[in-house]
Length: 640
Image (cartoon, rainbow, N blue to C red):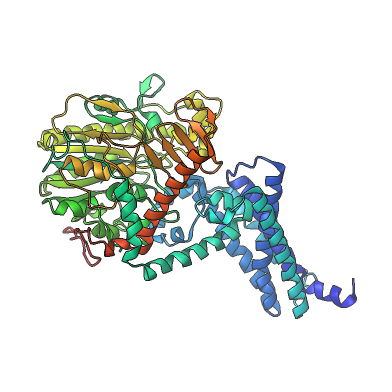
């Protein structure tokens, strides 16, 4: 090695060491902190290499600073990247997903996440920062090693040429493993596995920049394709039920984190949902109903159900596009003389609801200031469900009829904590605390709904009201597959089982209904809006929506998930692995290429068209939208 080159190398040695430490730390955290399903040695090699180029590139920025500042910047970059790692580990721990830029802007939610973060955080997080302390001590104790002399241009060029070469090698290997990788922005796990977490975050930033420009350049011509598609896929309403309940009240209850596997199940000989087990016998119960949420979880479920549009592939509509024009159920029902309200004993700004609800056409938001919330009647995320429903009944009696109302429960939320006196059933005994506690909070929610229904009957509202209940999203993530397999009596949770576990309860009870019916057609949250409106006699033929009336004799079974997976009457399709399963037998099947392509293309098309509506705020151009809300409305605040 020439003396001049060696002398120059000594000046970049500390920065290079920091970059290599960041690389190895990122690899270890990615391997152990995320469930990435590494199946082959080749995949592990790619995972090992993938953070190297980005670590070199980002830490290498310090080379452009002079003197001691160079090493300080290198350590600062390490600290920032470690924060990003920690944030993703915590986020992934509950949502099984990676942070996107829109999620980072959801800071108003962070104050209410204390119990969930505390459950997920551990000493492992602290160890992620120890290398920074060690490197800092090296820079102070061994000044010769952390040489801060001037770095000439040729050394910087050499450093970045090597970085680029590694990046090209990584991309080549990634494309061999997963062709067309960069066209699959919805598949965040695949991007992280093959390109590394930091490249994924940079790619996400580019997507955010792209989507931010869509609204500015959108015009009415973008709606033509969407209108044609929706019109060609429309179905007729059920002639016997259409308008049969015109003028009736509607109560929609969000069953927080409730999955369908709890319905009818028992723990230690006791039913988890004794009330709902009875209630479905006098209601319409859809036992193959799927949540379709993305990163917005509960807010996504609200958005889908009110708009019959898909959630975004990144972030939550409630944050990113709260001031858009929508054609939501509350606003549509205004023309029918309905008053609309939401009841949720949470901070009004959580999920940006105080901004989003006026855009959807809601007249009133009963939030935490309307409830008497104390330490005694609160647990986990806030007001206990039984107290929530008990306090909501007198508030509901003040609401003008006919009304369209939504009730959002809280108690059955991760980490599923309950006070001992509220545990109507013993915990499960899998050894997995999350699943073991989950059955107790589901049981508690079931009891709270029982009391609410009884209260509605006493108030005289029950026989004049359509009751709708839906599970908003999963409660038990893939991180708990071992325990879930034990609960279900299986050896393991397969991709088929994972798809099947996305089923959530969906119940419709009609006024004075006595005889129930279990309907096993494939259905989803996207279908709720047209189903409710048709029962009320509202014609939706001029509305742009992707769901179908579940009572329609022409209903076609096709439910799309945000990642491109879908369910039909015959198949489960898993987008991540590009595999088809027989929906009834759970066997992996080969579908003719032409048939598979038609189904996959249809799923992608619906997601794309829905995204275009939201990103472009296209409803502001739609002449068929007679329900425009504007963006300057405010919800009257209660007297305090």
